[in-house]
Image 1 (tube, helix red, strand yellow):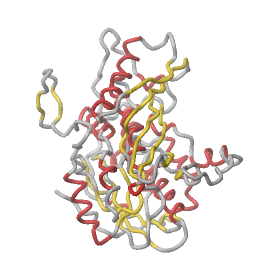
Image 2 (cartoon, helix red, strand yellow):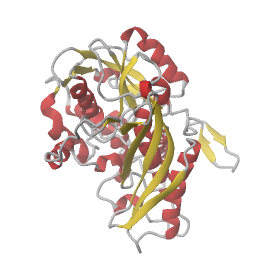
Image 3 (spheres, rainbow, N blue to C red):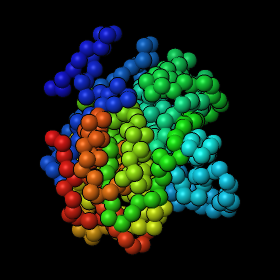
Length: 407
């Protein structure tokens, strides 16, 4: 039975649930270890709203979380005629490499960062939806090495279909995560749309020397992932009624855990490149880093940390449609062994919402950096691969680095 503790309000919360700034679930393990038995009868306990026990937010949307992002190939086609911005003196990062945020230099030593992120519901509980969406939006600033200082809410609701209290809970969830991060929600914009959407436009600050991009990975670097993979699989299981309460708590815990460690890691010159893993999956965001850096990224599936039920879901075909769309979009640039089973490929292409940070760092200090990440509260962090000289691609190897575990 999962250990619990009592909050000041008397709510029973799992000990592993983070307080947003640090902490995390220890429900992780590498691919290849004995999977948790798959429960065909697993059902998520209802988390009803007062007076409306059957309302489920996910039923209002065709997709959820970062899984509803446009597939990489579709996005590339839409942007094909968009001009890459010409050099602008103080625009340090624009639209040329698909980085997590734009960066504007305000003086020699300081920059302002700007990003926006929003999506449709990934869970049914409106408060949890707001928390997850806010944590996901803030992540872009942390992934660039900055700290968020202000946010604006982005809200779309199907007017007349969602009770006012549901919308209030979404907004309150987002505001609570922002408050925990020390970020005021200073305003926003709302529209009437067929599907509910929520997210943030976020402004952050960063020292110029600390800006980290998805380019800069060097041959020989070690690759570290700070959170377990499997959010898309869990969201698919939730929609199919296959996710139990422990799984739901783990889903919310990992997706509301802020990537604030990114701002601290960026101060280390041994950390050369960084990005957050979201809708394109681990393989897709690794490919973006490979292309931005002009190198090959080698991933070891046996070292990739997973949420405890992720492998069982993948083996049983409980996956998102976005996983296959991701593979169709970039599979030509990802080399996988013929012996790699489809379920492992689906894990590598699984769309993450508020996923972990993928960083490339000096191999000589990778162990110390990983230890710092663990101490900061990200117990699922693992070393998952290496950077090699060669073409801009991702290479998946059946065996490799052990991944290192703190357990």
